[in-house]
Amino acid sequence: MIINAQTLDLAFKGFKSVYSDAHLPMDAVAELLEDRNGRIALMNEQAAGAMVQKAFDDGYLTPAMRGWATALASQDPDSFKAFLGTAPRPFSHLLTPMPRPLSAVAAQNDDSDEAAAICAQLGLKPGSLNS
Image (cartoon, rainbow, N blue to C red; front, side, top):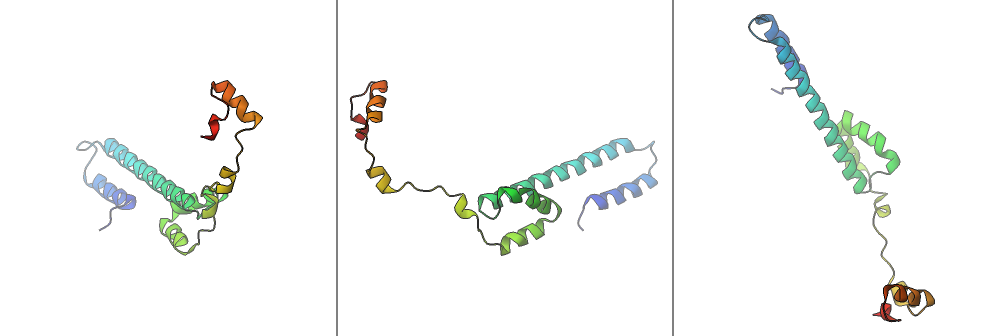
């Protein structure tokens, strides 16, 4: 048997009809149920946010899709997982850092006037940026 908020509410109503307020503080039980339902909603929201963040990090989503994805993951996590299972990762290349070409590093000329000014400000010998 799966226990969810609806099952607990039905059990609470049946329990309340059997026992009067003199035997059990119904307000305390109602407060506990309300707190429990709030915690479940918060955990579901956090789980949906984590799924959306992972999908964003993996390149399935763009920033503009975040609101839609969060709503879908909150309302129907299985549908969101099915979307991720069938969708390509078209945006993954946007999130990987571009390597600096080796030719750009080798072609740097640190004997320029700017390099000499930097060496002078740092108290280094001119040309020491080359090593």
